[in-house]
Image (cartoon, rainbow over all chains, first blue to last red; front, side):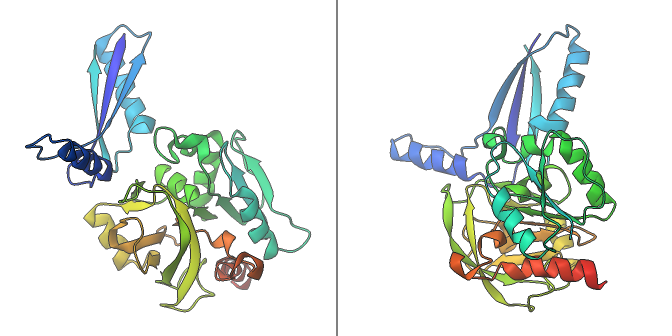
Length: 79
Length: 225
C-alpha cells in the first residue's frame, strides 16, 4: 500500500523558507500571493493492506520520527 | 570526573568536546567516546556530552535521527535519573528532538549558515553549568549553525522565564530565536542545551577562554556538593 505523509508547520510558527520563496515569486512577477508555507512530503510503500492498520502504523511513525509535533502537523494520505 | 561524549555519524565537535572535558578532569580519567550504536553506557558516568556537527547529514530534521539512535534511550534514562547532560549545537538539537529539553530549533531567520564569534549574556548562575560565571556577564563564544532559531509555544517560554531556566541569551540575536534564547536548562537544571560552542573557546590559543568556566562549573558542581 502506498502512503503519503504531508508535514506542515503549525499555524503561527514562523516559516523563513516559505517567506523567502514568496519573495522570490514576488520578484518573478507573480502577483497576489498572500502567503507561502513550505513543508515536506514523505512517500512510503507498506506491506500492510488494511487501510486502518496502515493509517495507525504511519501515524505512530509520525509521532515517533517523521514529524516534530512541537512545530509540525502531519496528515496521512492512503493512496 | 567521568565524562563521555556520544559520537554519531557526522558529529564533528566530538574531539573538541573531549579535550574541553579532559581539561577539567583528573588526568587518569579520560573522556570516553561512545558510538551511537551502543545500547548501554559505562557505569559511574558523571556527565554525558552530545557534541556539535551534522549527525546523519541533518536529514529529515537536524538531530531527529540521532535522537532515535540506540544510545539515546540510555542517555534519556541517565538524564531522568538526575545525570548531567550537555548538548552543544547539534547536541542541543538532539536534546530537543529527544524530548529532554522543550521547544525546537528551526532554520535561521535569514536562512544563512552563520559562523562567527558572538556575545552572550549569562542569564543565570544558578545552574551546574554556569555557576563559575557572574550573573549578567557578557561572554564571547563562537556559533556555527544553520538551524539555531529557537522556537517554543508561549506557555513553554513562560515556564522557561519564570523558572529561571534560560541559561544564555544572545546580545545581538543572530538567528531569530524567540526571546533571544541561546541556551536552556531542564527542569532539574542538570541538562543544558545551547547553540554556541563553549568547547571552542577554552584556550588562549583559540582566541579566548570564556567557554572554559562552563566546564569548570560542572566539576565544581559535581565535587563540592
